[in-house]
Length: 406
Image 1: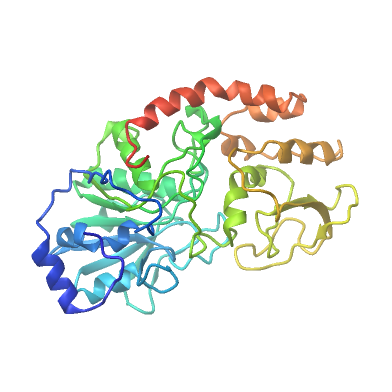
Image 2: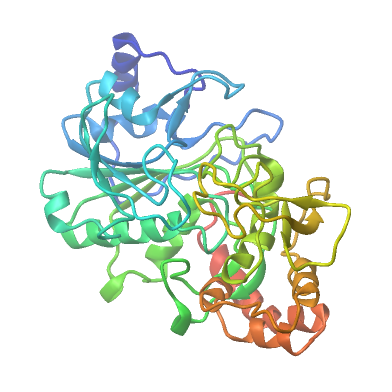
């Protein structure tokens, strides 16, 4: 059974151990066919009975950030951090691996994060967004098993996917099993955008998938394994702890912001369509409290809506810092079920010809060179979309093999 209420007591630990048989690391647990979307979603971290026995007597590393929590009740307003909970349950946690933005999720986008020690637990924190992005073999020398629990938002250039890839790869090389604690994808209700071409892979996109791929992070891990995307076609010893009461159509409001510039549901929904601007000259609300909900620049035509980016958490020096920007307010935009190209086309049209709109990183985020060429050539939105469709259809056939949920 999956616990919805976490009680930090020895009794719970004993009940879990007594009631659960040991399971192997090489299997993926199947989701029951009796999922009911009217019931509260139960995240993988809360299903202690499905993974706690695997950790007993083992030296454990956890890949985690501020989103890695066990909820105390169905409202998801009260929680304990996964690392704290495992330590309280006498699990031998040796270290924490931290992704982009760091263990506490405070770092700027792209900021290099140094290794450190967690003040509360005294555990070493090994940064996977600093001097190296893949665990070194010496980092794993005192580890028997790795638990990965990070909230994803379902977008190819969200770097937690690349962190998971490199963790799986390092563990496959070392013969160490990995447990993925699955979490809902708030953008899991659609698949859209250009599919990344292999020659353009980078840390902001390692795999030939659409910009928005419609899978949970657990399903995605299965796909990495099944499609042999790890180096030398390695296969990671993988176990996914699935969600309860979830489908890809289930709306999900994240109780904890997954990174500094995704403060609310609207920002998360708009993120695929706005963070593509990362490789352009446009500001998308970084340096304001409207991150990923507006876009603009000082050189846009004057309008009723404006904003001034200033240094804040997650954007120490935002683009056009302390400059008045005119732009477009999307805070009341209806929920998107597609990658919205109109914003990019509109911003390009509003940028003076003597200003370089596209920067050198745009191709990495788009996953191809064609999108920039199409925008610059004035190709219609419908024609651009049509150019993706064959690749999207091919991806959907691959995706089917790894789905855990309807």
